[in-house]
Amino acid sequence: MTQATTAPATKAAEAFKRLHGRAPDGVWSAPGRVNLIGEHTDYNDGYVLPFALPHRTAVAASPRADGVLTVSTLGDDGGVQKATPVTIAELAPGTVRGWAAYPSGVAWALREQNLPVTAGADLVIAGDVPAGAGLSSSHALECAVALALLGLADVPAERPDIARWVQRSENDFVGAPTGILDQTASLTCIEAHALFYDVRSGKAEQVAFDAAANGLEVLVIDTRASHSHVDGGYGARRAGCERAAGILGVPALRDVDIAELDDTLVRLPEELRPLVRHVVTENDRVLRTVELLRAGRLADIGPLLSASHMSLDEDYRVSCLELDVAVDSAVAAGALGARMTGGGFGGSAIALVPVERHDEVERSVLAAFAARSLVRPRLFTAVPSAGAGRDR
Ligand code: GAF
Image 1 (cartoon, rainbow, N blue to C red):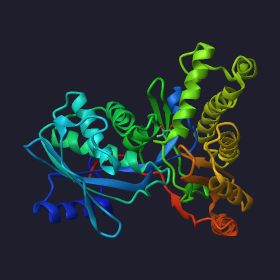
Image 2 (image 1 turned 30 degrees about the horizontal axis):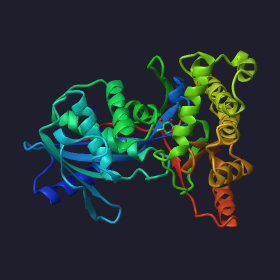
Image 3 (image 1 turned 60 degrees about the vertical axis):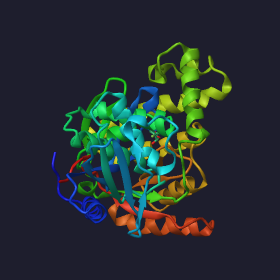
Image 4 (image 1 turned 180 degrees about the vertical axis):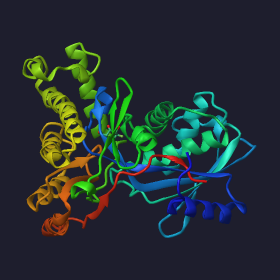
């Protein structure tokens, strides 16, 4: 797949030339994502509904022959950070820390699949996916690196397989116990659509999502409250879900029937009940959202978005003050619905906003943050964009 040159791709290629004195053999890029709905359902074998952001991470790359991986990354200020070069054949979990663990982990995961990546490569990275904003900047980087290394080695691979390899690098090399939502979104979303993905079956449906044609927009509110899934909160939720599934004797919480939810909850220790209630009702909300989108009723999904946020806040307990302020102030000013997006504990919220209410919603959100002396959030309108691919 070849796509129009994007700014990050151009920047990565130019930086590569400056650093290595020659043009890269190729440039690959991958987008960040927002998840419209379906949060903390992926590792419960459930449903998700993300779309790709226009923001991308690009990797300019050329092969080497000495087994070494060099990685340089271009900062917003034009400065370059160079990772310590590593030998791909010697990579093992724990050997690389910090940001360089993400690209190195991908090389490790591909090597673990016996794919021919051990000859080495020079990678130069540039991107505009907001980092630490819950918009999947780490997966954009990992997916772009995976495509670059596979592309240099001329290895054809199916996107679902690449998603699993990237997940392995994130889980086992970086040490974040995340699911498969973000990689799948980055690798398989297409323009003007949301991706309805059934994690258990791997079935994917591109559902038309043209907010502008309906007089609407998805406003992203990056709260700038930083988050990370390497520390305990995310893993604890995931472990709680797995424990609950074990007690209920089902392979995953996906298998709990919503019609029997009340009877099911009483079989669980009290602390696990809200987790299960969230996952089961969230899967149902995804299905109802997809039905409405298929029927072209975009404006009607607002209440489902807000119900999702309430469930994530009160039952799953992964929201925070900044996300709640973003959601409440957007809805108070006329958003049809709003919710946190991504894993939570900080990061971004999304709001479904009638275009004519944009200014009012933006003013309301900024004023609400200012009134609580919170860091000024960053707001932008997200348009469903293309998934990962080769730029040149
Ligand atoms: C993070 C994870 F990476 C995803 O796998 C997913 O679990 C999400 O949080 C919550 O829906 O983005």
